[in-house]
Length: 392
Image 1: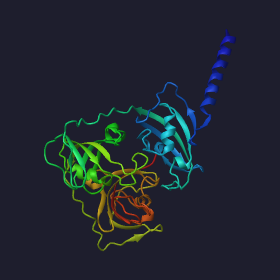
Image 2 (image 1 turned 90 degrees about the vertical axis):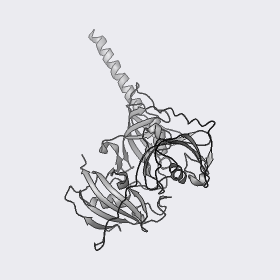
Image 3 (image 1 turned 60 degrees about the horizontal axis):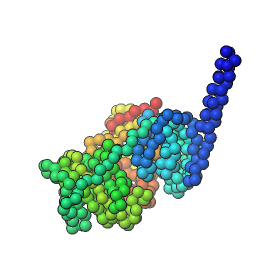
Image 4 (image 1 turned 180 degrees about the vertical axis):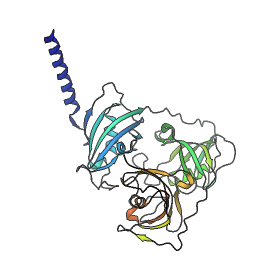
């Protein structure tokens, strides 16, 4: 009897050893991605294209420098799989996992950020990610609006729209904060984006260039509860270049949109910096102390909340958390924001208000961030540090 138990124990150990060896085998795909399953879960579900996946990860360079980590933040990263929301190596690598599995992905530069440097990641970098597929939310089935028999109206700009459902009340105006649900289609009916699938309406300031021109025009035609189909020529969308890989060049786009709600414009005043000293750091960042707080000092790797308004040098506001009544939250010093912010916010304590004058080398570089931020743009930010949560 003991001999039988011994044989059984040895067999179990052998099976576990074989499974472990299989799990640790590195596989190279046709694209050049390398992955190693480090923890298996044979009973777990596999994700499909379009599913929302939650992934914990630690991202490293080849020299083991950690450039980002959801584990450090304590919150998994969510995205829709296979739709180009993340780098190609992630879209491919996460698709090989089952829920509950862990893997190490070795992603060559052509499947990551290529020749472009971003944050702490140099150009042409091979990246290593230790990832865990935490959860899978199956994609929602989206039904296109029924527009048969309804009139198509064309505006002077070339925008076309079809009224699917009329809402009640007045329409928003330029500067209103709008909340919109939408699904975007190519002319062949392929969905390239949908807030419905994410269960997360988009919010933005209307009429100030934060979205494509066709949206800024179309939403001004709606009241809360209105549903429209917008047919947007490429000149009012992403232009001749498109936005590869989801949106080809010169693409006419179709959006089924619903205006969920909107808020009247909030007036934001620029900080009064008259008579205050402008200080310059070694990097070229300039800052003006507008108000001194008395709270906790911001530190690298801390989670911070910041209210801000961003301006071009001519005073044009291009973004403001104040208008959304919601501060931005991010981990400081890990490349989640522009370099000028990572440096500037570390100069602050809770309650501080600064004006940051950020040269383009510490902002969006030579290319800018069209259409909102021009090439080689120096940016001005009025910032207030709302809270600091120290890194664990």
